[in-house]
Image (cartoon, rainbow, N blue to C red):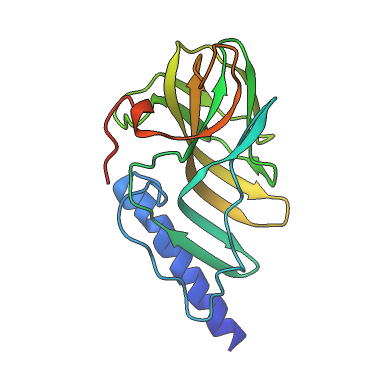
Length: 199
């Protein structure tokens, strides 16, 4: 029975990889519908690592996007609706340093963070390659405004999980509720958007 279960997982994961080869889009690209896991899968068994944005005044966890994760002879691929919109923004001033990190994992080639005006899936302000360490220290060099940081990462977690995932973080440069010196993590408000959010 164990051999049959392993074979089913292998076939399931091969299907995830096939999506990448046939469409030239990673299986966790955010397109399509949720893929059902193999029989016997327990949701808590295999989860993607967290993507976080760290600043001197707070920690923001990314809104989880699509992912494919394998580990301990189990695996799952989930495609989330796109585009993603962050639920929070980290408020910084130009020149502040922030860290984009995946504390549980090291990263593989083609892991990137794409900075876009908030809500604008078709506009790019900056593309940053993420280092293998899974931790990018970045001195913010953007004009004032609201942004989202869309992360796509291929990873190897410290506990043996591997795969790819996407997520989005929010950044507000040179803004805040009271003064230009404000820093912190705030909930996203519709007025912050640069492009209209889609449902």
